[in-house]
Length: 556
Image 1 (spheres, rainbow, N blue to C red):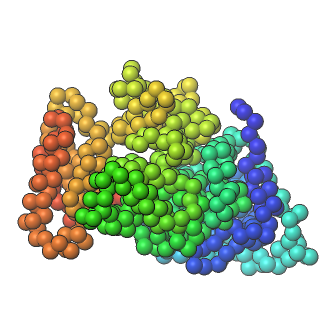
Image 2 (cartoon, one colour; image 1 turned 45 degrees about the vertical axis):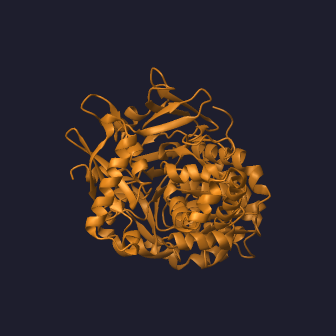
């Protein structure tokens, strides 16, 4: 294994080097500088030590993104404990399950999560700590209660003058393969699995970010917005860890961010890079940009080759400003981009790229910078990673995407069987996704192998490809394609705001959907044509990663 520096040492060095710089801000709230972070980490370490936490114990964190969440996470790793980040959107039962399954000793909980969980369902916990002020919601040992009540006193005794840079000294991990955290996959089916992520994977993702983004971000200031949940590896690696280790300033959107709040935050903070799932970008483009360019005058100008280039440049500048006007690129991941939005972004030459990853790779597998990115792909094998397609003809015949390298997990916690079926004897991680790879190494995802449908004559049908076309059609907000016998049915959740604006009746809506069905069938091969479109009045249920829980709709 190549020489891998200590990840804990990188945290220590960043704090010491950036001591008086702004580190973490709750958007519209308080700011912590790097020395404030260090002091809070030190106090939590005193609480852990006197509260009976040993190296290697598990500490769970469940709450919305905030500066105090980030500090609790850093304090856990730098103490030598194992972090268990839990998505705050999980139900109370899922949170109880994960806390119990992970053998967590403490649970840090946010203000909303605190109101839904039941401590009696998590009997092994010794304490529940409230993220906003680190007070104890539940203490099951006298030593923890004592430590919290006398925390400031203990801190004062340990650092009688005042807390300085030379006091920052953390226990280093034993080696690159030591476990840093257990991350439970959002898992759309059944009970999610605990992914054991080693320090080498955290370092490798950080090193990748330094190599591909470092020099581009230097001239753009230090500001970054954290929108994705930090309990998800994608948000954690690229909106928090990389930035913190590089001395940047992270702004957390602490409330559930609507497109309006996100757009306002972009304008205020002017981030140097934006990491997002497609849904966020698509909503901003559809609501803020498309209405301006879909009028007759613009359509006319765009159809005139002489003016077309100028108009596209002007549109690109407007879109660029709507994302704060300071970014190197937008990196989209977590799901495929809608083709209509992607071809628009490509046409105006907007600096965006689509990456590909998995929790099991902490998270990055593929990436290409925006100026090398091939539309429709998800980039090439990332630094420290190799990718291959399990197919007799990887350029033309889809096969499972396999990945190998420093980013790959140690396995699933307390689930050797799942580990064996996911990582083979040669170290290849089996993603469960199907794809193709071109001669230049660009990877194209064709769908999840478990979502693949089989037509009556044995043709493979990728529902995501049909849904992508459907989502660009009149009045379609989102869709799921299901199979009934040998028929395919499109379930559609309409854009009801637009339906109301146009004053349409249910009957009108049915007619428009039938027209959509005929139009889409004109471009689909015979074996994947839709036999019906059914209207689904509620939004589809989604995982925290914002992918639709399609298994819920197979029986409709």
